[in-house]
Length: 310
Image (cartoon, rainbow, N blue to C red; front, side, top):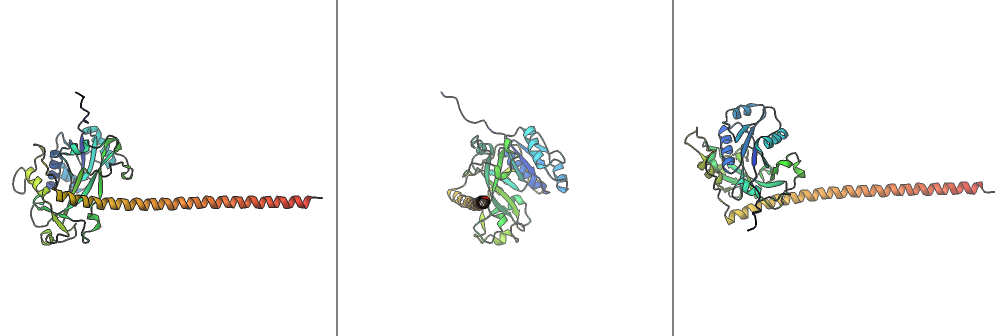
């Protein structure tokens, strides 16, 4: 029998920029650990949210970043402390939802020569109905609506290999066309355009039903009431796969991003072509000027010789 050529399971660290909502941070940490992340690094600027993460329980897999460390330093620290092969930078209102198995599963499928994996952002509305955000995440903004602000339309984000952590996002080399993640962004009603989500849900051109976050956070919750926590320990999450209809919607939203990237690439190509044309024109003009100068010099030398003839 031939030996197995399966790649070893990659180690994944999540660098989590924490906000001020402790319940949201707890839910985020539990979700990513149960979805397969090997470690979480909690960090925040030196302001009020730093106080919040000082209250979060830490253990072998959940660490607080060193005080005063900036994001580039955090990446190096996470690689050294957690032995990470892949790094995911995210905020406490963002869940990296693997589109197949677990976070290590989808990253393990990325070929060795590729230094980034893509995520398509999809925004879920957290209604202001006075209930826990974990119960309110049931509506997703549709990019097909002109009423949705541009900042909430789908965009591309990257998980990166540890060796590529210092690269500019423009220099990353993802596997184009492979989207192993949906980046589910939890936005309040005000952030997403104002108003109570329940009052606007009837307009399906704006919202579509998406209960995945609510359902998975229900499974992670360890108690009842406002003081409930979310379980970090336990079996791996059994994340539901998209139905064929949902896959079609995802493909449409990914196409929105691809079209935007194509338009941007065309703009960059046009700018480059214009610059090259300018350079070529300037070279031609300089060569023409040198040629004219040489012709004038030759004519002047010829006249001098003629005047000097006996």
